[in-house]
Length: 392
Image (tube, rainbow, N blue to C red; front, side, top):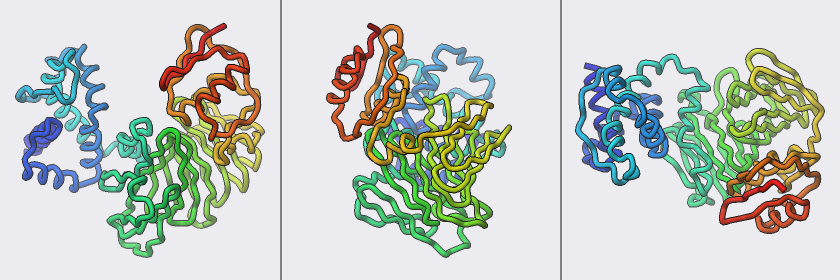
């Protein structure tokens, strides 16, 4: 009976992607999503057209009959895909989309109980890809998305009663004394070219750099305060000796009681860096841990964890509106340029070994920055939103 229900839900989701659901079927999907958080997370993932499209493109080169046999599904009707997929592989999408939806549903439900909190956090933010947004977005606990640029100077509320105040650059969560509600999570997504400040319910302040996302509870309860970061953020943690504050980025965990520190954990950076400015933090990657003192930086790459002395002014320059470089290699510089100016950088030939030192205000226009780099002897060109760097 449960398997039949799974096929029925998969069929409804397929119809939803086609735009063919009736009002009663939409009500049925919403009711299914509200049954538990994992249903809502799976629905978010399966209605992300970019994600589904990539998966089907991958399946196009595989043996679809063998996959179909593995999940023991029955053939579903072909679907018109002109609105979702390119003509080149629309035939494959028509065949494989129902298969993919059913397969994903069954696999997800079979493994749901084995997911740890970090994996669940990654699924919750599956749609929270900063590169897909032009404005700061807030994803509420029920999966709905609020464009904060359109709700400036307005009060929002969550289903646990938390009141959220928003202006053009800061989101503030009010304290809710109701202790009988379950943890409710929100995710804030910061696109390229943007920074945003967040004040959590305990008074902790977080500054989020461009291309970042942070998942956090609307109210902190239990033994600790845990947030999940992808990207870069500077934290000023409200002191609470009875409830440690933890920042989790992938396999890295930073635990504090009350302190000021910066975490840089972008997906396209090989090293996760935690820099301490004030107080004390414990940084761990599962296999080892280090306690930092002010002025130190923990660097984690895979299983390796090392501690170095850090130039804290340079580390938090982004928070103060500056690019700050100190003998910094060109690829590292250009990754920052990509995030702040919302451009793509490509290399034509060998990557130059040039290193840069100095400070540049972030308010500088992209064209001016390109001219500065040319003055430094870097051979590059700007075409629309692409910077091409050529070897000399």
